[in-house]
Amino acid sequence: MLAFVLRRLLQSTAVMAVVSFIAFGLFNYVGDPVAGMLGQDATIEDRARLRGELGLDQPFHVQFGRFVGNAVQGDFGVSLRQGRKVSTLLKERLPATIELSMAAALIALFVGIPAGVYTALRRHSVLAHVLLAVSLIGVSLPTFLIGILLILVFAVILGWLPSFGRGDVVALGWWTTGLLTPSGLKALILPSITLALFQMTLIMRLVRAEMLEVLRTDYIKFARARGLTDRAIHFGHALKNTLVPVITITGLQLGAIIAFAIITETVFQWPGMGLLFIQAVNFADIPVMAAYLCFIALVFVLINLLVDLLYYAVDPRLRIERGASAGH
Image (cartoon, rainbow, N blue to C red; front, side, top):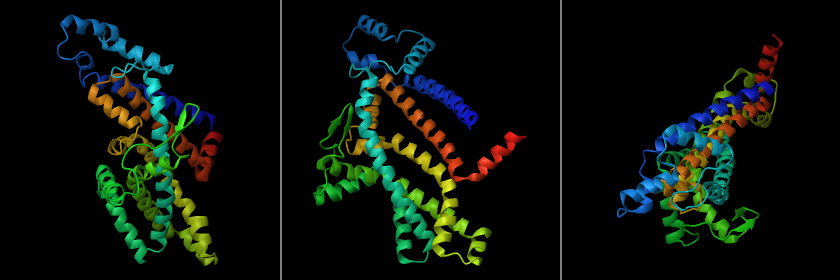
């Protein structure tokens, strides 16, 4: 087990190094930050002086080496747009993104899995057909269009919920949360539903397909022949084996929720890291863009490691196979 974790950590380190290199290399060609900082009226001498102060006149490998060395210590440099430390900007925006992502993930899981089980067990019922039809809408419509439609209905026409912002927040040390205020909870509803809808329909359809496949297996037929109740068969045997492949997809989708919250945060002007990234792209703020991409890569790496560890808890065959290989 320890060797498995160490091997995964080495692979994760290699992935982070490659992502950092690609991100830093690509972002050097998205625009000239010096032009945005000084404007068009700046002289050539002013541009050269600022390039020297920012270290942009040095070779690529020198800039990248300095970036990696500082990033390992948690220092991603200074934002070219705001003149503040990138780590401070990310720390200020992180609570909003995590709060939105976790709310969307909970909605996707606690609605998607039961809906998938229901549509598999009651696949000929009217409600199952309605859920499948709604899932098609969630898959086919783009996220930004869903967000705009929700704003139009619930914020503009009905006036029940706010259309932008995070509402009032409460500071708990450096962490800020809107879950403790009524306006914060209201502001969270529309963006979390928008972000969760695609993931929820994906999880529902995956659980349904896996559940139908498991119900056709021989051991389920044997369990019925033994006289076990439908509840014991469906939830004690079928659902447990259904969740093995679902864990992988769900883990990756949780990472995708954080990574692709950019669109939702832009539509609802949610003050998270995704909105910060969009603003950085418009200004060619290379340190912020590189730090954000490294953070997203780290999220995916950690989630993949957690998914691999969960396999051991859910699927006993992996423990048996690894134990047998260790014995040889």
